[in-house]
Image 1 (cartoon, rainbow, N blue to C red):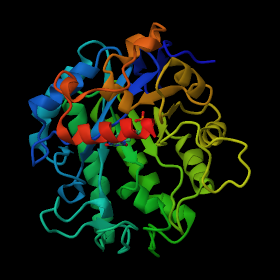
Image 2 (image 1 turned 30 degrees about the horizontal axis):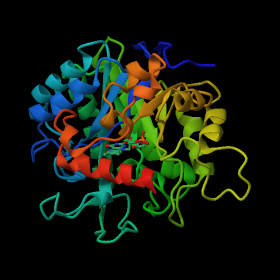
Image 3 (image 1 turned 90 degrees about the vertical axis):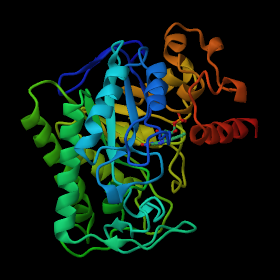
Image 4 (image 1 turned 120 degrees about the vertical axis):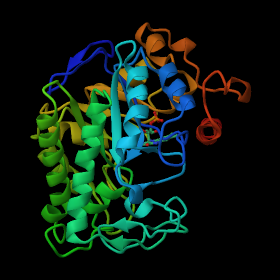
Length: 367
Ligand SMILES: Cc1cc2nc3c(=O)[nH]c(=O)nc-3n(C[C@H](O)[C@H](O)[C@H](O)COP(=O)(O)O)c2cc1C
């Protein structure tokens, strides 16, 4: 049985001082060109120190992969000085700093791309209102995307981060290659489950190799995935079990599932016997640590989640309570702040973009 306060040494050598990490959360605080702002640094500094690691908001590795306004960028060397300040602010009191790197693919709205057409594995629109039909990447462009993830990893190392998380979840480009909905290719990158996995396989191998060549220091490489999609065709648990089975044997430090509720069952299971988290954890069978997430609010939730994972990620609760970890670790769950008022926004360094999410979350709890 794993306890929240236990440290953990990851495969590639970094040790986290406890099992609680801040989940990656977009805050829409960066400048229009992806450069970090002082407000954003203050927002992270407030939430660092007590947690084992902070995983940053998604940072885009290519300009055409920008997912929204105010997004953090890592697609140009000009971002390194700002990212260095961010890494230093997170690391100040022994919390490890992990930069999440991503590409929006077909989820990038044209407005964020200043009118340019988004790109994806295939020219298939997402099933959501106002989705734009993307352009399918050419073979050379697919290879260039991989190169740009590698360049982003190098920038993260040069900026002083302790690691990166490859964002293969939440319907963005990496997931779009793995999904039968968005990937209709018939070349080396698509056509069968194995070929849809090819992009992930090559990306992860090449990023790991790049990191190993760039630094002798231990440096975290993690991978985040979403276990299933609503669309038909879409990713199902069986596809994901194939994915994690293959990723678990790589030199990755952790796998990080993306779930709204750590206790959730598959949408497609007729008989609800095992939660998604249990199925994934069983498949991994101890080969690599798994990070669980999804409405973990207190130490009892964390304890339960740690029955089927080695680490827990905290999202919205870290927005409302930056000191969640010290309270949960000392058994003072009664002090954890779940709701915040408009007056507390400034103290919590929450801008209007994040505040919208907070309000939706509190409304959800009231229902
Ligand atoms: C405001 C907000 C922004 C988010 N941005 C990201 C992101 O950039 N990358 C990512 O992988 N997940 C993102 N997520 C999902 C969270 O990492 C997490 O999985 C989700 O909030 C569930 O955890 P929670 O119930 O503890 O909030 C975001 C969630 C929220 C609420």
